[in-house]
Amino acid sequence: MRAILAIFILLAASLAIFSATHAEDPIDATRTMIEAQIKAFLNDDADAAYSYAAPGIKAIYPDKDVFFAMVKKSYEPVYHPGNYAFGRSRTIDNGAMIYHEVLISGRDGKDWTAIYQLARQPDGGYKINGVQIVPNTESKGI
Image (tube, rainbow, N blue to C red; front, side):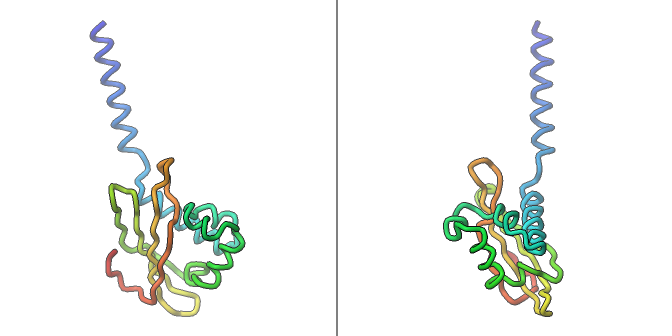
């Protein structure tokens, strides 16, 4: 009986370790989210783009169309980038916040750095909590 219990405990521990090591990395997951939102902007898909916004952003822009219009007007490099690449990433407070630097070449020929802030939600997932853009592509860290 003890042998069966020991085997069961070993199997359970192995499964827990396997699950933890194969869980999706929050850095990768949030990069994928940013890329999905940029693709939604490129496809003029307000529903999809808005779905990645954190509750705080949705409180400021409770309507997806108002949110989309704000992004078009104030975040053109993010709304329709020419090319983009990820720079540095940083986690804060054990992953409560993740920052990603996205280097963007705008369609107008100007270069930008967008710093995305993603906040962990109560369900453990992440949402985009804000974006700051500055005219520059030199990675300075975050």
